[in-house]
Amino acid sequence: MFLNIRDMEVRPIIFDLTYAPGEIEFLEAGLRQRTDLKVEGRAEWLELVEEIHLKGSFSVEMESDCERCLELAVMPVQRGFDLYYRAANSPAGGGEVALKEGEVEMGFFEGQGLELLEVLREQVLLALPMQRVCEPACHGLCPSCGINRNREQCSCVSELVDERWAALKGFAVPAPSALEK
Ligand SMILES: [Zn+2]
Ligand SMILES: [Zn+2]
Image (cartoon, rainbow, N blue to C red; front, side, top):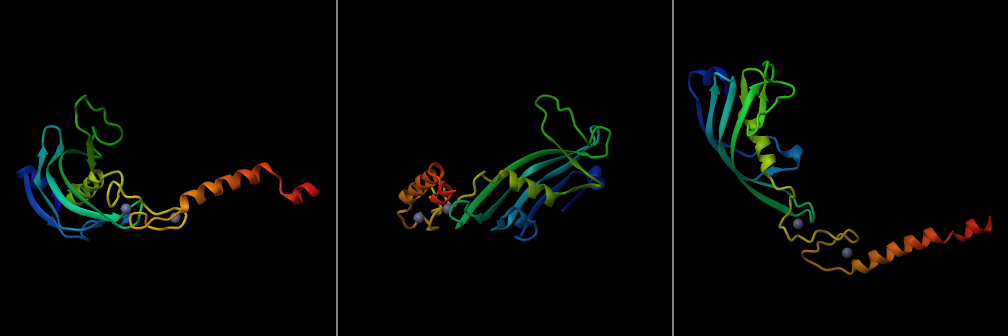
């Protein structure tokens, strides 16, 4: 939905929308949208300060590959937003904006308004946990044999240590061929 300033000048835009998976591009970020994204809120044009005020909330379930074991990681997201956007080409906009203390972070829009879809994409990315894991206690894959350590156990730990010692030995003792020269 495009939030057009001309419409907002008449009255605030009240929205209650559903974005089906695929409508918002998430693949680039390694994410898949699992459920409909539901969003409701309002967009208002603040005449005096020439800013769009966008306020509302959304919910969606996202998924990706677990960072540790590559199995499915499901991430429910529910979040409110309260955002202000200023025209990028306005005298006050663009470049650095000195924010007064306590002032919210300012976004920028170009042209006649703001594409809600873009805002939502950004908000979903911000709302996701730093670590995308199937569960916080995921043990991940064994770096040595690749086994999923949530399901099976391997005996690679000792082998890993052995490898490290072997590397150290190789460094300290010159190869026989080097000694002969
Ligand atoms: Zn996992
Ligand atoms: Zn292993």
